[in-house]
Amino acid sequence: MASQEQKNTSSRTEEEQLEDSPLPTPAPDSGAAQAATSGVDDLLDEIDGVLETNAEEFVRGFVQKGGQ
Amino acid sequence: MGAETEYGIHTPGTNTFNATWLSTQVVHAYSQETGHRAAAGGETRWDYTDEDPLADARGWVVPRDEAHPSQLTDVEPELTAAQIALEGGETGGRDPGPLMMNMVLGNGARLYVDHAHPEYSSPEVTNPLDAVRWDAAGDAVALAAVRRIAATPGLPAVNLYKNNTDNKSVSYGSHENYLMPRQVPFRDIVTGLTPFFATRQLICGAGRVGRGQDGSGSGFQISQRADFFEAEVGLETTIRRPIINTRDEPHATSEKYRRLHVIIGDANLSQVSNYLKFGTTALVLDMIEHGTAPELQLADPVATLRAVSHDWRLAKTHPLSNGRSLTALQIQWRYLEAAKAHAAANGSSHPETGDGHTADVLARWEQVLTGLGTDPMSLAAQVEWVAKLKLLQQYRARDNMDWKDPRLALIDLQWSDIRPEKGLYYKLLQRGAMERLLSDADIARAVEQPPQDTRAYFRGMCIQRYGANVAGASWDSVIFELPSQRRLQRVPTKEPLRGTRELTGALFESSPDAQTFLGRLLAGAG
Image 1 (cartoon, rainbow over the protein chains, first blue to last red):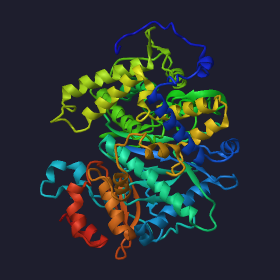
Image 2 (cartoon, each protein chain N blue to C red):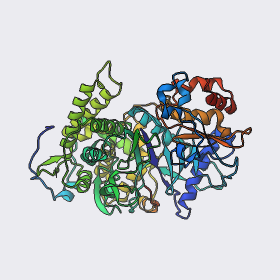
Image 3 (cartoon, chains in turn blue, purple):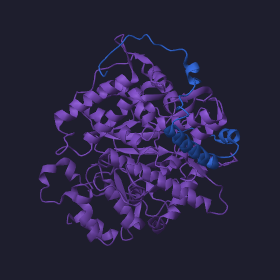
């Protein structure tokens, strides 16, 4: 694939639709999937615990002066 | 090579503090942390002399190494790296005052205030792993300053973020510097680098929530910086930012070298992304120098840079000047294949006789491109934008959030909080979800010690051992102020690969004080 060129035929305009397309999720009945899910739950729980409170206000307050 | 990081600076809950003043407090706090700075009694002034010291030292320099290198066989090599130029100046004249703008660190780095941000410029290094090491050391330096401020009564809590935008139209940089032979035509650099720079974000983008300079557009993109670039080539770094920056302060012997100042990169916390950023770029520059870079020309580099960043599904093709189109991944493969051939031909990637890092850079680069072509999410432990995207997608899936949810913007911001207990990158690192190339102990050593194989060793050791007598320093000089001398003594360090431990270590070891050290340098006796 490294040296292949192709005609530009796939100019996409459905970007925003793609953004909100559903995420692939593991089949719920597999053991590995359940383990993966509980790992993710555990991670997100931990991150919930450290995220700044009032996300909207915090993000709005992060204002920087210009840089390089 | 070397890295510069401007940190985002924020006092939660208030915007009343002056950002420049806050940034000086970061520098001041770090100076309080380091013993040798206290010994110097104030800040180490940066030597802003940009001209060749031969020209501005009013005729009494001793440029033996530059004029007649072959005639100095009777002199220890370290001495040629440190010819003494004396520069007129009052001793102890300038009071640094209460606002500390600049420090030179014992590891050879510079910590200073730049454009209302604290900035850490790493010492010069010779390979990509060391670039990651001393860049990460900067994050530890910044963390130490934040801790100190938090423990200081009367100062507001200060957070620092290793990111590149506030999502409100402002961007601040993370720059790379590469030393190149001056004889390489700049035109070749522009031609060879532009398609690479438009697409290398696939391996070292840090990821961003929001589109457009003010972040008002909805969605994720690969790069923090892409939306802030508006020109292909130019001198500016703060307005109309160019993909290729033409600033030409070599900070070295200018007839031999140029310093390629790269302003397009994202600040990286991911060690693998940071490693590949330096490693692949150095390889591409080497190819340009030797005429082996792939011949590709984008029809519209600025538009492509943004389109690549916005296309995190890696689906789009990008028009070339010849009317054809390639995906960003295909462009990266072109560079990788050329680099493999280049390195095989010059021997640098040979497993036994190579340079020790090119083979690893090529292998990791290929691993990442292969993964991006099959299952990008498989690279969540290596590639920073993928790691961030994965976390964001997990949140979106759990809480059914759309991209406008402010919590996603917060995750993007807090990803780069440099405090391990708050920064989300660090949370993943602690869980083993981000690959390490360096241990925390490795990084802690780099906070204290300079690289041994560049002139940063000379600079760092001067600060460590004789800091009380160092009045100023820059990339290419160290200025001593001795009680016995009325004039400041400026030691030029114009050769980046001199001043190494091999060349000067014994001289440092055998000189208990600055007076002895300088005397031996001047006398030409180690």
